[in-house]
Image 1: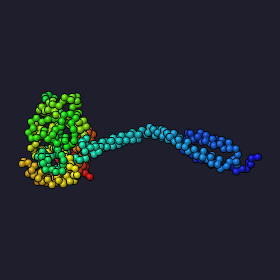
Image 2: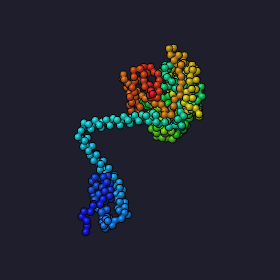
Image 3: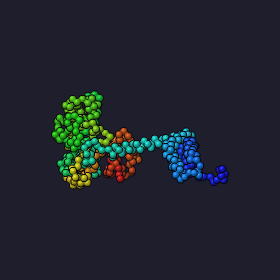
Image 4: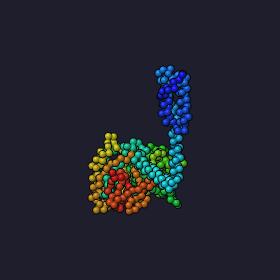
Length: 420
């Protein structure tokens, strides 16, 4: 006869099932726990009387109960799914309940995401991407450390030099295995009637070779094309212009194109991924620098007060930016003394002669911002059809890369460096 006062046995395998059941999804927990308890109780009953269970059988029952862990873990995705849908349902209900708060939250998120996307695209274009040329990390730009002594006409919003200054640097520099100058411009391609504007680059003879940009068709410009008095300069067209204007016709080499009423011969097509040196812009035509007098009808080559060229070079092996800057500093006095024009404003002569050249990394290209509007507190600038805000304090301007001294009248005309 069974002893009615027998002390209840502690079934630790059933206790373990109850503990593991806590992590089982709530809607499945009761059925899951019932199934496992029924199975273990059935196994226990098959072993007849509890008093006859030895420790081996008890251990087997406990080991079987631990399998419930794997079963519970297998059901975790369903638990997370239940909780996720429950949270989403609750969140949607609260959003519909507070429509004003919902509108403000959505608007704030939209503005925040849009602003962060625009900032990332700007930084990506200016800082992260490099030019699609050979070894862009070896490229360096040579420019004035400040524009205090610069007087005359300024063709672009970024630092430039005159052609006489470029020629002096080209002849006296020692830190670059190849060096070139370039300037951006526009021209009219229509021989008559309605104007057809095109974006142009004036480049020195070593432009393409120094960058390591081969032609997609024909040839590129060389030093043989760039000489004073060139009467029939050749033209290299961009790949995009070749496709849009000529339908990628391979017989385009040798054909004539009218540039400001001047017929010029197409000698080559640039490769498809080369857009030029300006970030966010591309070119249609590339002409040698010597063609500027022929195309524009004025002599920028001799002008010492027309600032329109940007100088870029490829560092010699073993040379650093600092070494190139030191060499540029050493030749600066002779460069500006030789390039000083006779008609330069007397009040600015000393500042011009005191100008110094520096070298800065140019692997990411040149940032060209176009002013859209201005106010007393700042200027809006456009880059790749997007607007960015430039704060202009009372006495100085903030730039993108390094500070430069500019006059108050030029504050909204030069976006270049971000003051550290």
